Length: 420
Ligand SMILES: *Cc1c(COP(=O)(O)O)cnc(C)c1O
Image (cartoon, rainbow, N blue to C red; front, side, top):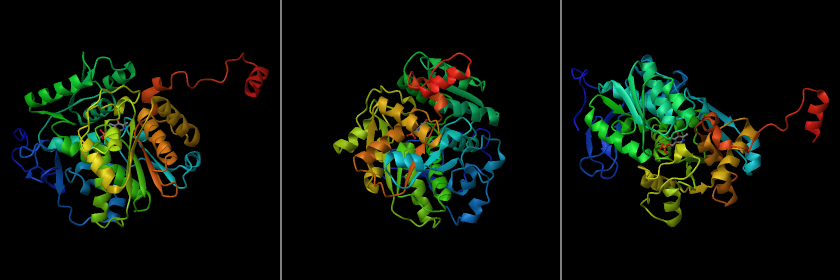
């Protein structure tokens, strides 16, 4: 693949502190480019930086979105001035009632339902678009089953870019509408997510001006997940939590949360204290959890069958790196059934007033299982990443919740229903 720089070839790319790409396996270095696999060892490429000095005060006086961390991301130095959806800086909620229900002492919920399109994907897409712009792309594209589709279509609309979003035609109507409303090119493909993904890879080789956020600009996209770690640390008063529970789809978010914590320590922005990273999957798509339990280094692909569709990647690209991260930090990975996922959604809603989608149900239910099995220390400070809004997966609630009764319009009838 060659560097696409049709419109910007007359100047060097400005990706802030990012200086090179480096291969994850053998550390081969190459110039910044829209590439995602090393031609030397065929492992994923990751962004390497020269951070210089970064001060807390500088970050604290920045915008109340992910660009307050621009000096730690592969984005141009004036990124906040370019029209964008301004994701991030979502609430970190002290969750005492949920803590009590789970039997832990100090618990926080990072509530990423508050992003512009209601999932954490707005973070990664914003970083991908900022980098793609520097490389001279003019179209933002992705294969998706929902959250990424929403985020890409919205970010492209805001930036005045074209978007091309490929989804399986079987996708729920709500997810089609919440992407289509942004009026990009939404194409429903007769096939499953694996078919759509393969098409995206083929199309990205053919269209030199299309940035597929999770394919050819994936090294930049994935760095956006670090902002979750940065925010958690800053919101805790510039320190790291002792334990964090992270949902796993491709596994990118989990590895980047760890990378974010490490960078903060290396830069002296926090005391590099010890923390443990825990992974959460749905049993119906639990290839990484299975490999962890069985002590393997490789992840055996599976065919997903779970209501947690935003996590349903049967062949997770970053699976082996998730295993490394969790083992290195002394964490664990668990998986939970679809019934437990629904119970996790309801537990978070009734204890903290936060309505999460199925991915959040996976995180809450997994945290419960980790406490119950003694893997999560109930006395250590713990953060749960709640990555998407419950309005996205209403179907998952089915008949589990509803009105207590339907009554005629009289005080007596309402009172009788309440007393029943
Ligand atoms: C995509 C997604 C994740 C995790 O993504 P990774 O591929 O593991 O980085 C988690 N939660 C939600 C809601 C998502 O949409």
